Image (tube, rainbow, N blue to C red):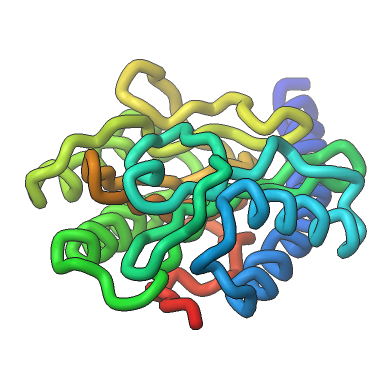
Length: 236
């Protein structure tokens, strides 16, 4: 009986993952199109609306949450809100956005550069990318959620920064679900979980970097649904 219940739960989880995958595909295409847009001189709010409109045009029923577009010092706030402020050259721009399809959510964050960045911001990007990959490499069924958070946290702290939030969370019918990957929530991952891996590095008064992938947990790793490049993209 227990074996049948476990298999049934896995089947439901995988069906949910497939629906989140369709939402992620729209999110991926939106990021690819966004990278072709002009950023400098446009406001954060204007680009956030562009993201939402594009997701709907691509077939999403809506967005999972209001898109975040945060440039310069605003990007140093993990939960920034878009402002009626023009984006300037030489800044990082954190874009956190997600499509919803058939009631299921996705989630993705990428950080762009609007020209040559100061050394501290370029270094922050490298640190965040390294922390994210280190955690991703250990994602699999049975992985301890606190330990995964610790892996990314140690990379960020070793570079002299403070980790201001947990590593990630589950995604499905809600954009924030169990399991939670952070120091204050004990647990383990199971096959079929859909979770985010999203460390951030934030430099108060200067800018921020966050890199977030949506992944499906498998028995021996993770299937990454966020396909848009994690290389630092410098916009035209």
